[in-house]
Image (cartoon, rainbow, N blue to C red; front, side, top):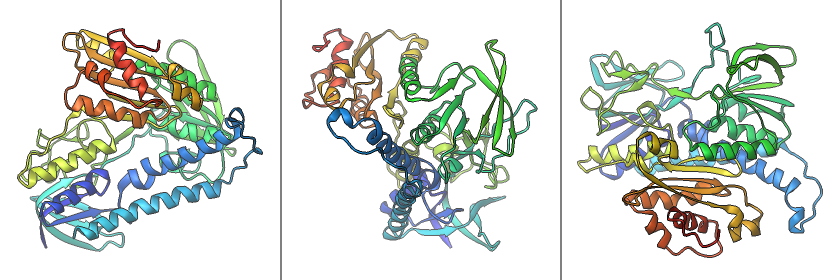
Length: 472
């Protein structure tokens, strides 16, 4: 059976790539090793975590935030099973939606582990769970296999085993049937802070251990530092510049040994569960890439500006290639490579890829941070505006955080936007649109924003670039 395109992996990048290719008239098939489509994001990542983040936020908001609005209710009771059912129903609806779209667009799905055959990289061998094998052929192949949990290694260099009961990856942390009394999280990145927030809201005592001297590496430092203070007020404890040296299973759970990297000594903390949130690595094992001659560099598939590998007709997108490991970045690449294969001009603007942390308040970012801009030697102007001065934020009692814009001094072109605040993940979109059209802070300042809205803070921050904000 020969196809114009076979996509290996049906995460956000893979399924979008396949659907766009089919829309453009290419005979398309997908290969997926899991029994359901959607990859990590839909099954055990973005979607279920957001379901629990929203549900746990409602639980905490009802318990602590309603009285000042004049709404008096009894203390809410947690039904964790019902909350987990909400998460499962959300996942089911999303993965079923992808299956429907495959059927609608006449895309042939193959369930099993795909592997490029040595010497014939356009032939894909598919191994089902029961061991049965079949082979399909393609004029073009797109590798969209995503990423996997990065292992945590102890002082002896051995990886710490994950059993998803006490020693958890993000997958296990989304499946707990009881709220742990003590949860230790290794890693203060996006995954650690989001899942830490979920279980802290539901009653766990959460301690986050981070090797670096700050949380949220890669985000604007000022935003990250303010976010840390807010999270500490909410109850998360942080041990920064700290290395985990050993994790030991006990009858009660586990103990985590650590040492300070700044001379603060060593220590041990007990935990009912330990979440390893030290990042993710490209998923390339078992794909036959090296046997097929596909070049890898530091575990990633090497591609050119058109997503092509060094093997003709083999392409790669998403977490398995260079760049941010973000679902929407993979989706943009999936559309781009499908359009290229159909003879069009697919393109991704990597300077306008937003990132969002779904804590509360949210953190959202696009473009250069202040530190990155200065490290590049750029002359910049910075505009800021706090939500404490925003009328809608006051009315909603959501005044934590601020908007920060980075503009090039000579041209006023917007280089970066960073938001800490309620709904930041939605508000950031207007900065992304502006940057996609190479707009200036002045452009943003002159756009009429509805009043009263949280987004007015973006306009005021743009005015602040030239120190002419009206409301501060």
